[in-house]
Length: 269
View (tube, rainbow, N blue to C red):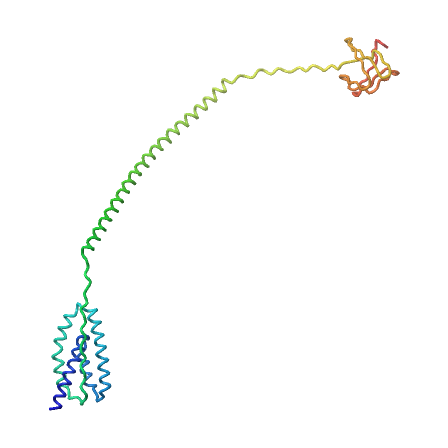
């Protein structure tokens, strides 16, 4: 009887630990069977191992609940279906070796994580703002396109006007050329004729002729054929003769720088 009671307590403890294993992990059956098969009569080591397994399972349960909260209901239903098979398996296992009872680890209750709710009104407001900004951009683009169309039409009009002005300028240039040729012809016709060139008759230059009327040393009196007289001395300038260099009363002559010699007239000789 004592052995049966001890076995019952051991099975209940195993069921509690295995239930906590099912909450955090998807492979509780294999873990329970391996724990039963590997159990040896070493109480201290078994307690430490079970404690580590319980801590690891608790951490896994917390992480699994945090990241897979939406899948919690399906996993819970699957665990409920697996629990009866675990109990039958443990009952059919051979009686374990006597060992001190293992304390069951109480599962830690984890507070449910509240999923963040999205404010649909803010999203709708942002979408409406985006639509309004898009409409504004489209209207601005349309206005710019209209302005570009107007500018293109103005440019086309200016191009046509410039082309017409170029045609007018070419016509005027041709007319100006014609008028220039006509003016040149008329100017040539109306140009006054130069007077006829008359040959210039150069009269021979007649040099004045003087004769000695009277002479003394250093002074002389000269007379021209027309009766005009002239008193000279050495260094006097005489037209046609130059400067008097020497008055020679003995020879009856006057020497000049031009080489001409003034003498007495033939009537006086």
